[in-house]
Structures are given as structure tokens and as C-alpha cells.
Image (tube, rainbow, N blue to C red; front, top):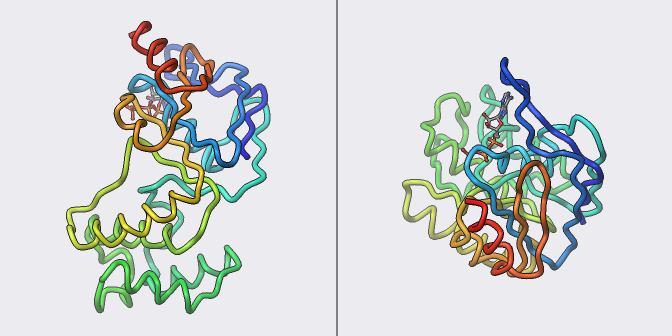
Length: 217
Ligand SMILES: Nc1ncnc2c1ncn2[C@@H]1O[C@H](COP(=O)(O)OP(=O)(O)OP(=O)(O)O)[C@@H](O)[C@H]1O
């Protein structure tokens, strides 16, 4: 479960305050995947980052009682000076997992060859995103956070392998997905919410959410 209670978040732009959430309260329960529809630039990434714990609210509380993933495609949290192998083992220890398992899983999924032993700083951005995605897949979460659809790399073989693993994971898991497009949400959830003027309006069905979203845009 993820619960936002009276959460406010805004940014100072130098001229005005950009409000993302204004004392918003909502809850996402396990087994009830939810999509959030919001126009570009209104705060989708910020909300996902707050759920992941990457950003703090200005006010209010965010409570989590489940294992919540970092956003799919997130490339932080790794150390550039260390190799994929060292990063794997470090992250495994942080999550209380078996370092041998995480290392061999990632080695198999991301197919980096000898680069697996080299510092991340020597990787291309494609190699880095393959590694970070493999790392996410090596950990099992209850709730997966997706910002604007599935991440994809330019490596077809990797996309197929990682996509199949993720597909299996998502069958059992709860998904929170944010997008500006209802079409992107359709694959993942039946219920949805609309982010509007700093408030989140939750609906039983995506259809209902779409009606409000289409009306305001
Ligand atoms: N650290 C920051 N300082 C100032 N403004 C910020 C900061 N982070 C985000 N913003 C602003 O807050 C708004 C929401 O940003 P966010 O990235 O969450 O939007 P988004 O809905 O995901 O956008 P997009 O659809 O374009 O990816 C944007 O106007 C952005 O410029």
C-alpha cells in the first residue's frame, strides 16, 4: 500500500510557485493497479519520484507498507567508479538479497561481456540503461512504478529478454503508471486518477478518468 496524506509539493520557478500537489490524499492498495493521467509538465515524474522516495513532499506524509520499486528506467543509485559486478553485490546487500544470485542474474540479463568487470563510467548510455534495468529486475517488488510506458533500449535481444521477465513480474504485482495518454494506461490498469490543479481525482474505471481528462484538455 502507498498512502499520501495531505501531501503538498511545489517548486519555485524564480517568478512563481509551480504547484504539483496541494494537500492531496489518496491511497493505492495492493492488487489494485492504478494509472494517473496528467498533462505534460504537471508533475507526473515528481509524483512517481515521491512514491519511490526519491523526492520529499513539502508537507504531509507518504506511508508505504509494501516493497515499492524505483521508477522503471531509473538510472541513479549506482556508483560510476565501480563495475557492474561491484554495484550488483552492493545493491544486493542493501536489499538483503544473495549477492551471488543478483550478480549472476544481472550478468545473464544485460549481456555486457567483459564490461561487466569495468567501471560504469566506461559504459555507453545504452549499456548503462541495460545494466540499471537488469538490476531492477533482479529485485522483486510488490508495486512497480512506471513513468510513461515501458523503457526500451536499442538492443532488441535485451528488450525481448528483459521484457519477458518484466511481463511475468507484472502479472503478480501492482502497477502505478503515470502518463499523459490514456492509451498507455490501458495495458496496465482498470482504475485511474486524474491530476488536476494539484489534486488527484480517483475513479473506479479508466473510462471515467478519461472523461474528466478529455473535458479539461
Ligand atoms: N527541481 C525543480 N525546480 C523547479 N521546477 C521543477 C523542478 N522539478 C520539476 N520542476 C517543474 O515542475 C513541473 C513538473 O515536473 P515533472 O517532471 O514532474 O512533470 P511531468 O508531468 O513528468 O513532465 P513531462 O510530461 O514533460 O515529463 C515542471 O514544470 C518542471 O519544470
